[in-house]
Length: 330
Image (cartoon, rainbow, N blue to C red):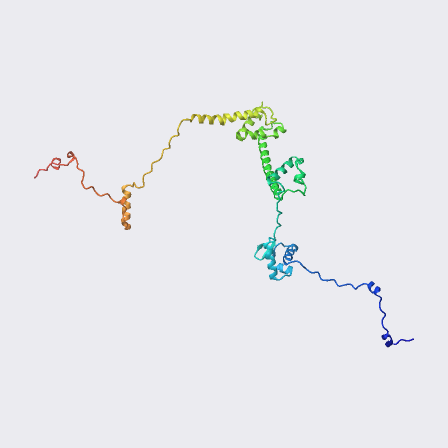
């Protein structure tokens, strides 16, 4: 039987069973676009985190975030107010350094924590784990951060001072050894210069070196014994005796001999009074004032003659009749 196109078109399609329809795989759905739910400030901060250059201008931030200028400037302003960004120059910003964590005392003051750390360094068994938590060498310790920073700064300062003291001790030891001129035995007694440092609190170093040369150096005295320690009583006694003979005794004698004597008053040179001028200088000043047309000061004016001349004794009066003889007339 031949089925024409018209008959085929009139034949209804067979219905698909519900179970087969459910079992048929659904066509794959197109992936939906991811939504960016970040705030404008978060976008600005992420832009700084992704950039290699820490300093970013407003134009660079707008280009990197895709925000409008008004929204970007508001986000930058809020980030600066919350100390997340810091302004470097006009229109240039960078990420602010992270804030340190707030310190916690955890049952002790700063000084108490430092005392506990110092005691732990001397004896690790002194640390009470039940009360103070993990020891300082454990990263999970409960020591406040500011105490840790303060203790580390103190350690660095003490280490620097210790290096300076050690360098000074090495220099002093070299000077003492040089004064021995080779007449010494190396050992702990020579390395320990504590007795000499104690003597230097009173005695000058030059005097100590002079005594060592005289008591140790073979060139000064061939009978000098070899030095084995700076604690040798002969060396220390010689330093003390030389200090007394050259400094203590002379100063004591000078002070005792000057006792009860008042120091003489220094002679002061008398300077002439500025008002006491020579007559010639007063006359010159008067002439200068007259030429300049200025008034003459009272101190430069001539004193008026006295109202009455002082009388002379009769014996000093001049009598021409008795003093000159008359010439005879021709």
